[in-house]
Length: 245
Image 1 (tube, rainbow, N blue to C red):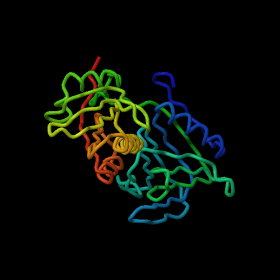
Image 2 (cartoon, helix red, strand yellow; image 1 turned 120 degrees about the horizontal axis):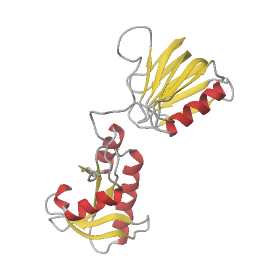
Image 3 (cartoon, one colour; image 1 turned 90 degrees about the vertical axis):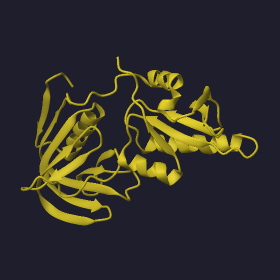
Image 4 (spheres, one colour; image 1 turned 45 degrees about the horizontal axis):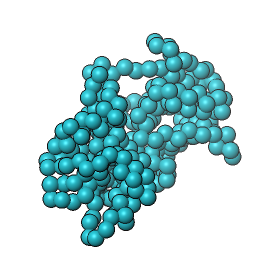
């Protein structure tokens, strides 16, 4: 999207609105929708809202908020996750916007039978600078200062092969326990946790003796769902930014 540009669609068909929304989010744009929709929350506080004219906001980080005519709070809290799924229902022809993990067990779902207005534009955040370094820069920083991950950590190899693929950094903890370090230059989501868990399991099967490797995800931050998954898998997290340009 060109700088300063605001793209606008008026009364698009659901199919056109889906393509517009998908392209805008793929390009990192901020999208708003106005139209008649139903809203369903598939979370611990499940509720349904009947068809009404509403305003929805879709942010490039996976946040989706649907607002009614009053108040500053959305109809439902954003579910954990950083994924927005956009499709057209083959049976009803509705534009379906779902936020949350792909399993559908914890989602916010808005179903638009009409879209009156769709806009897409870039929003700058001048208060919080995004990491500008690459993943290679982050790896170099961790190798030079492994204590940023944890005290006493000693890197042994990079791109160590396992049956699940090469791990970014293979290291040894202060107590001698093997450690798998997975690096992400941006805020990490559930996919990064699953990747790390596969590496840890593969390395555990590959190592001899009673060695039991740990896993540490290293990134500037993690999504709420990723943090919960780290706990479920018994994995650790270390907040480290790549060096800035």
